[in-house]
Image (cartoon, rainbow, N blue to C red; front, top):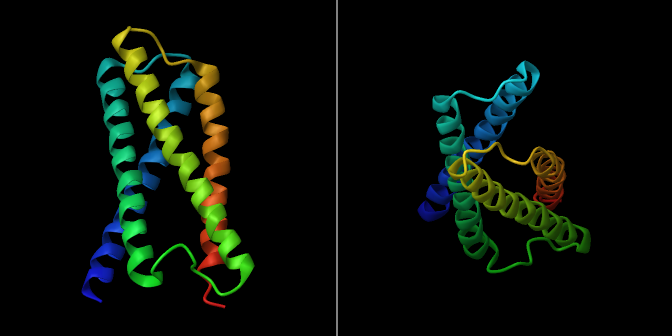
Length: 149
């Protein structure tokens, strides 16, 4: 039982970390877009660091989620009803999309930064839309799958 509590604590902390960084990054990006100016070098470094911390948070979510899944349910069947498991797999799909986007965008921003050019605006826009879809799937799937009903 103590292991579950520790895992839940780390899981919730990671959720707050990743969520806060995602919201903060959007605010910073929108401010620079509205101003029509690139971020200053210190701001650009901070944004890269935020991206890495966000990836750390998402990775910790996956690790702790997998460990809790195994400890509590003993595998990937989390609900007695078919729709509960369907929702859980939708949650995994959304979380997978978010993880892939985080890795791809961190690599893209790192490459763009190394080449002294701005990130691809179209790619950033597409990633934002896909990230919102992934977030919806993850949150809706969680709300449905873990209702206990």
